[in-house]
Image (cartoon, rainbow, N blue to C red; front, top):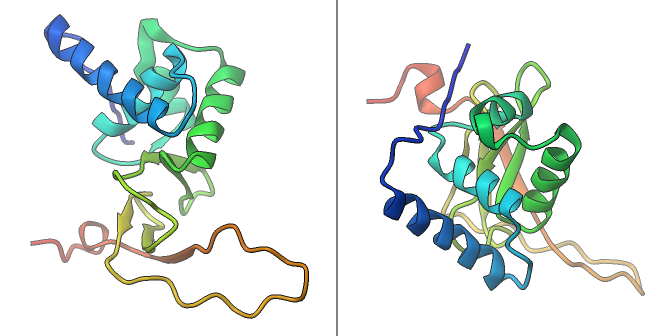
Length: 155
């Protein structure tokens, strides 16, 4: 089973710098940089793979949030485009930080086994014609399968 823990032995200056980076990212999209949003975004950015709600809860340790607050923060991060939510092969949600930039403007590959999300250079196809009165706000294309690491093909 995958275990991830945030190492809290980083120098105070370094932690403050990372917290400032997450705060800036959140404010840049016009939102409040609450301590909970900053902590969870920092954790997702430091994680080597997508994390389940439980793994995030455990990794926060003494910085733990109540379960409902954590669900709300994760949903907000996904809706804001700062994180991805993926369902793995066991039908568990896994969360990972979105790379910098616009994530509705390109294609993603989601690994069904490890939950990682990869940004691909391929642009999504043109949107279909919509009926009169409809308004498109976002177009997403997700490819699913197994990544090179999970298939054993990674060099």
